[in-house]
Length: 113
Length: 114
Image (tube, rainbow over all chains, first blue to last red; front, side, top):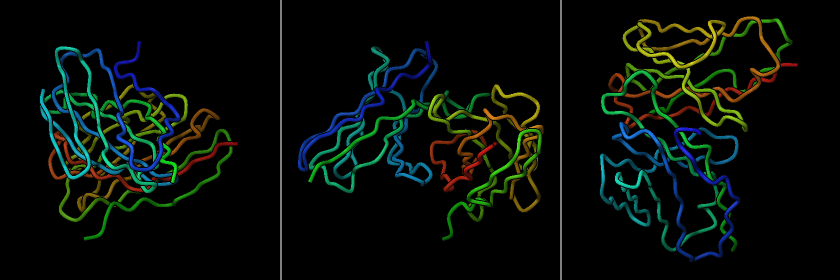
């Protein structure tokens, strides 16, 4: 079992819909949770990060962390075709530890105009 | 300010050869981490350099090595290339060591081993 599981998709939704992207993890030591967006032929771009449990909102994006369930989510409101990309969740043990960031494999999201 | 710059963008090498990839971090950033991205395994941590010293290392064979210079630029070397080394190699820079809550990635070097 991988430490971080993420459905690869593709997930296809119509423009304007609310998108829900999720990751589950097994290592209870993870404290920092990040979401990255990666366009084709580009490097990952940090969208937002959350420390421990709770919600964080940034514009159309909301990140949720439920440590009791080892489950994190990213919600995108009013989705746009420009949101079409691969979304990667990433996690880190407090202070970094020996393993850097641990990533999910990414969910390929398609927003249909 | 300028982002993370990786060179070259594309490389084709033959099995058994060695390759060196370069990463210039964001100005003022002292930590550089390297990752390998493949369709099968996703993004996997290779190693991190901070102040010219390797601080952390992922689970990769010794054929993968790196170094960091006094200006924080980093190079990654892969010796005795194997077909399975074909991947997108990404570097990420951050201000502080290990606390990579704000790690900025370059566009990557796509290595193809034939």
